[in-house]
Amino acid sequence: MKKITFLTIASFAFFNQPAFAYLDPGTGSAIISLVIGLFVATGVLVKSFWYKIKSLFSLSKKKKNRYQEVIQIYIFDLLSLIRIIKKYHKCLKLIF
Picture 1 (cartoon, rainbow, N blue to C red):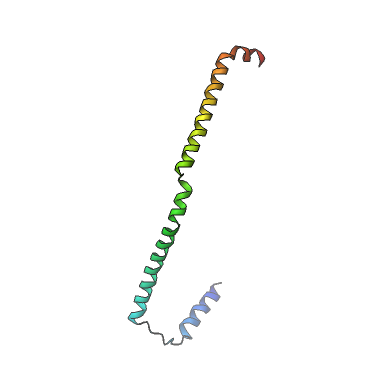
Picture 2: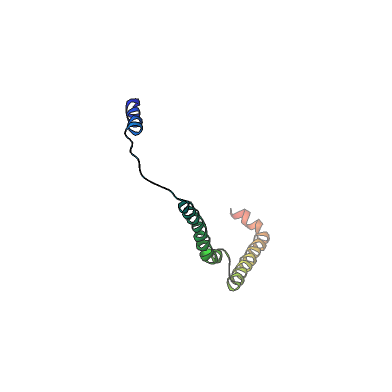
C-alpha cells in the first residue's frame, strides 16, 4: 500500500504538465453569482410551497367547527358513561 501511494505521489510530482489554465477576475464573480443564485432559488422554492405546507397543518373554520362538534359529542358521551358507571357501579362489581 505504501509503495502504491509513493508511486502515485512521485508520478504527480515528476510527470506533470502545464495546464495552461487561467482564472480571471470574472470567474470569481461568476462563482459568487452562482452561490447567490442558489440561495435565491431555494428561497423562492420554499416560499412557493410555504402556503401549501402551512395549509396542511392549519384547519379551515368549517373543519374547526366540525371537529369542535365531534369533540363535544365525545365529551358528552364520556360524561354520560361516567354517570352510568357511578349509578350502577355496585351492580357492575357483582357481575365482574
